[in-house]
Image 1: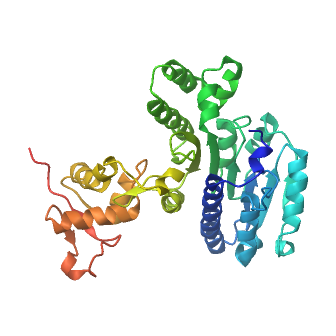
Image 2: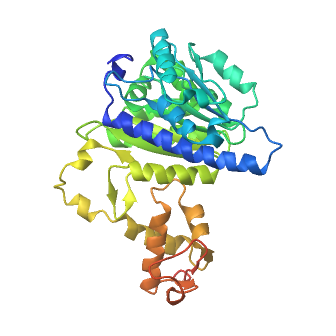
Image 3: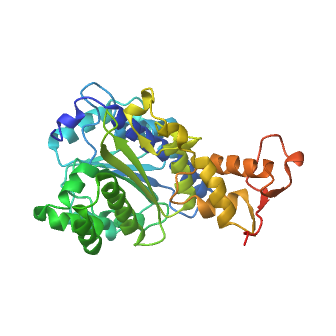
Length: 377
């Protein structure tokens, strides 16, 4: 498949990806704008940057991510008066098509700042430009066809400033093959860091495919975190049969609130869940009838109860504190913690203040205190 043929028809996976990005942009922009309103001395701008923007529409007419973002902005006066956008693609045909698609969006003239469309190769010069700038709050989306241009420095060049979050599409198959290809060693080193890339090269041959995938994604997330205390959240896309991974969409933020918002969005876009615990993946095969008993035997919410009893033994914490302290780098969302704590309380394994007789039936609010018994010797 070529980069151009990718836009022939929008796949289910592409639609889910665009939906996740657009939903997060809407939520992120609202949070940033509300903060700016409380601090009128701050710059009253936000930005969206997409360095591999594509032609704007698929051949079947479906809008791609840039158009969805602009349509979201036009709907809300607070956003359309602040939003600065930069769309880039190295393919001139794509940029011409994108400019035409943007011009045809109803209400596009109401944006205070006209969208900028650039036609440049993503490389060292763009990274240096971002590194030398102090950015307004920016949502940064990187969706290369392969992996050229995607580097740790590029991601960090935008994330360094306040209010800046990043989403990038990670072509797992291409990168998995690239790790064993000496011709692209420098590009892999730029993505993982040389030390981590060397570790993956040594383990690449003998690990089974599932272990290799987990290892590659984990090392990439750890490489991103090594630049500072950051939250990373990967979302996996599988092929039509649900057999192989094609891509990962990876979210990066410096703020727990952004992580929490994105976790809720990705949870809703997941194609599967067990006991209400989302899979954080989209697989078309999840919509087919499930035959295996393994789906019935997986009980992650029960596992969460056991983990909480162990990790917080002898302590009293609010529901919100428990969620923030434990949920990072796990598949559990806030509603999972509320369910686990309600079950533990109903079974007499923890106590809560106020107890369930004084709360609205079936609730466990963020400020309810849970007390865990000491560990049994």
